[in-house]
Image (cartoon, rainbow over all chains, first blue to last red; front, side, top):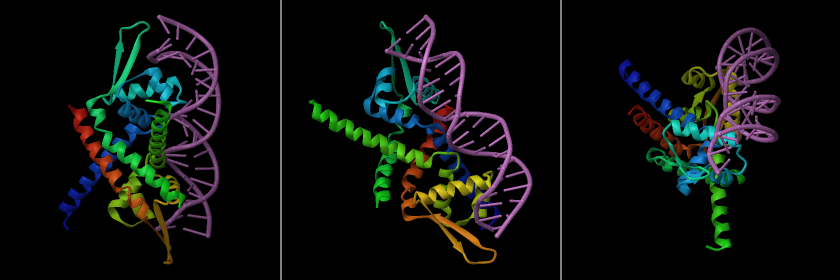
Length: 118
Length: 118
DNA sequence: CGGGATCCCACCGGATACTG
DNA sequence: CAGTATCCGGTGGGATCCCG
């Protein structure tokens, strides 16, 4: 291998590492991926519905995570003009592309439990 | 739907949430998944080789993460009786089952960059 | 109902120095 | 070479209370 092919390979490698950390940074934290998984399964949920399903999350945390997910264009927030006002959260089309990733995370997590118990 | 089917569904759901958090807890942190990805691509690496490839990680952090990954049976640590001693790290068979997950994380990360730039 | 404000602290992770 | 020891700042996240 010459220098050039080395550089091409390591550049490719760096891109993949960057993609990997991109993904994990976006979804890191105790609740974010559970929020996404819940919205993926249930479609649209209001703030309090999410809070109830997630069971244990502090409202501040839920609010903050939802904002970050909205910033990253994974979650859509819609304020309904009812009284009292309600707010609906759902995945964007882009957020829904996480289904494969989340599915694989669930699948691996289940297999890992079996493996560890052995 | 009656009560029983509700309970079955929510039990299934809880299992999936648990699997999801299991996976993410194991791989959370700034470096763990990059370590795994690097070992997945390169096979076997020594401590200093890993440190050089990861570029920027503190030895303490690398050491600690490797220990945790070993505890979770994802990474194998082998001490070679050379002088000076060398230590080789590689993925276990179980660790190698993460390839699908890591591949999907890379794939989604690449797509996400395209999406955000738009 | 849907959050924001405040307080608090454990722990993550970086920098540096040192050891067998 | 392969780590460990020590120090330290930032922050992730819980608890609690409050507001429109």
